[in-house]
Image (cartoon, rainbow, N blue to C red; front, side, top):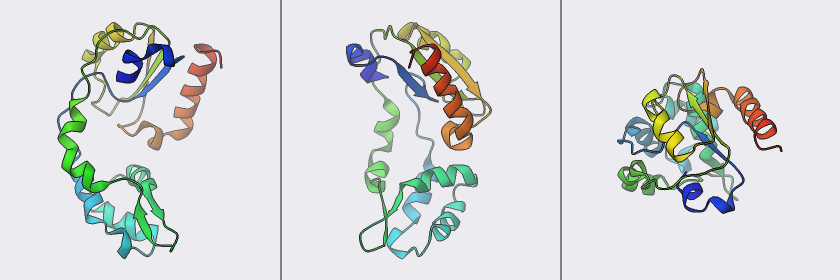
Length: 167
């Protein structure tokens, strides 16, 4: 969102998934604890990783989404694609977001999960202020929209691209 507002000429449209233009308090503590608890070098299978993460993240679809960040290296050992230590050390900064200024005058799709609290009804006015040509679609999911209902998510995005962006 910040990039679109700062450099609108570089984009033809924008798709935003379950986040509003505002600051968020730290609230992924259990997920981060789970990621830190997994020692990739000790894993023998993805099932081991899923079992370890299940102690912290009860939702199977969310675990599977998170575990997409687990990869095998050249020696067939597991490693993280992401820097878990850096996330842990900087989590407070991530929620601060950017100072959102200006407007993005191009077609914008916001997709939110109804069971999520990332885009609340109270965020709509600010979204319309910054993104006046925005459409909000609500799906029957939590925050991990694309992981929980991938086919429906792709359908929503395709519809937006065909109807609003003419792709």
